[in-house]
Amino acid sequence: MAKTQMNVRVDETTAQAARERALARGVSVNRYIEELVQRDAAEVGRSFVDAAADFMKSYESVFADEFEALEAGGLPGGKGTGGLPTA
Image (cartoon, rainbow, N blue to C red; front, side, top):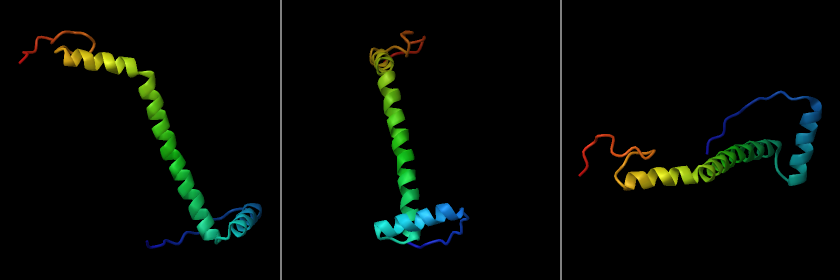
């Protein structure tokens, strides 16, 4: 994969911490920063999936009721066919 150069400015304490942590892991500072960003992006994705799963669990019974009404030939919310022709 092609690499893109970025220049960032951080205070000396942060720069030293990045150098030390990269050295401790046996990677370059560039690789260390790249891994941090990738890990952060993965966490955001995981958080979204977790939140979606929680939403689905919270409204599971509502969704089940709506789909049961559709399967029975009615409209969501138990409103019959709403005057629509049925097959």
